[in-house]
Length: 399
Ligand code: AMP
Ligand code: MG
Image 1 (cartoon, rainbow, N blue to C red):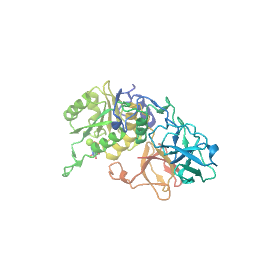
Image 2: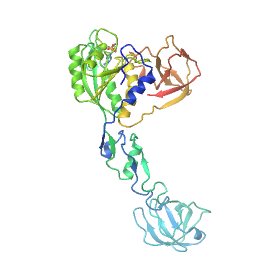
Image 3: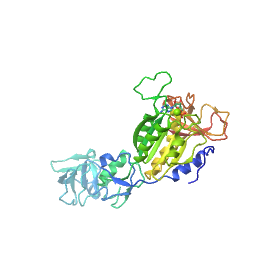
């Protein structure tokens, strides 16, 4: 793979293409249906049966022949759900039937109990003017052999119902990438500690853990590496030995102690690019080796969040053969956005308004940790664009 060097800034689309095309599948495994939520199916799931499996009554009522609706009907059997009828409905006969029960031979409709009158212990007549059939026919929803869920689908609760209904109790799913998280920075302390002067709480590692879990990967947090070569080296070696993907945050900018790219190279990770024309997220680094993929993410929490969302998440999904499609909605922008510098694509946090549009949230930059909490989505301002006018329809990518 081509190496774009330290000073070359890639357009986002090019960086995305490079990352996505380098994704590798990790194999498959069977999991119990109770563990399948959010996993990605690795094979098409077929139905092993017809659904409904028999002509089924949609109502509580009486199964009879439409031709006899004007006549007094003699009840010959009662058919609860889960019972196989023993008799065939003949002329002027009916069977009392419950919702979900098997419609007996000979009957071509079920009249609702509400439209009948009891004439004697064993006879009824129809009091309505007309009736629908009220029969769900065998195989009208699904025929045995139909594809129920396609390979590559991320399993949601409604898919679990389908898996259960076709007896697929141990679906074949994609293996989940094991993803290492490494924080870097001398200033970082863990969240339980109250930061002293000059210290910052490590929020990225926990945000990334949550984002990874939501994306269906397996996060593994390796801790904080100080901004020294040996500290980064030893934690990196540990992570390389046991991960499919490594996410480092911090240490990728131009400062004297931004050592991550150097340490990746020293661990035989080939750096493909080191700058992307996005804001936030410019110093994003992507590296590969035979064993592992590495992303060096900028340290500010909003940058880490956005780069994970737009670049890392689609990549991880591809590693599970799932094509991630962000949920985007076109909505009118209710407050203009303008900027002076336009060489990068900007991602701006926005919130839905009561009037059905979106508006930018208060946002001071990529260190503004709570700005995203008030946002419902992100909009992209393309490189080269200085202003998006009020009233313009913008694509809102939900977060
Ligand atoms: P860096 O990319 O290392 O230059 O970091 C950029 C900014 O992000 C600095 O203000 C760091 O203190 C902050 N930062 C780096 N890592 C983290 C982290 N894990 N959690 C919160 N903030 C961080
Ligand atoms: Mg740093």
